[in-house]
Image (tube, rainbow, N blue to C red; front, side, top):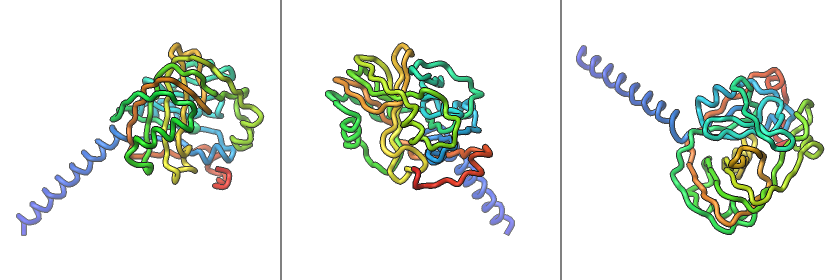
Length: 254
């Protein structure tokens, strides 16, 4: 009986070590970390409570919105940048809270050159043919010189309870930079995640010289390098701000 108990204890220890090792591996690869929900933005809840410094420990590549959604946010090579109304980026402090931010440690498994893309819709359909599944998340980096990009920025920070889509109708600023070199940070989320994240492709752009940033509405290019990483693990941190905890989140606003 003693030997049997000792064997069972050893099996338990080895199983626990294996589970912890697997969990640790999941923490460092193929994981999308997200703070906040798209649903809270669409219900006018913009207060963040999770500092960027915590997210930057989880990933060096990402996009989203910071506290109060004062502009478009991009994370590239571990550095967070926020664009102003003109799309001019500035480095953010790690103390800035995230309202809705997605990050990962970008390690692409596919890289290719795409040619003669005339719209964001065409880009999405082309990349979709290269993906093994539409039911998981993906991180994508798109690098090149873009013939034209339709970019969005904000003319003023959000300071009301107005849902994001309604607020944008009044305060979004659209620009059309041409023949501009830079990088797009993108995530593709499955349709079933539409209340959590932007379903389909969500792209933010930053120029090569780091003098222009924005949310991508449309694009065109002759040649661009596209790198893709499938993300099989998803980690979500919900805000603990009073606005979020007391909000009645309505899915119909998504």
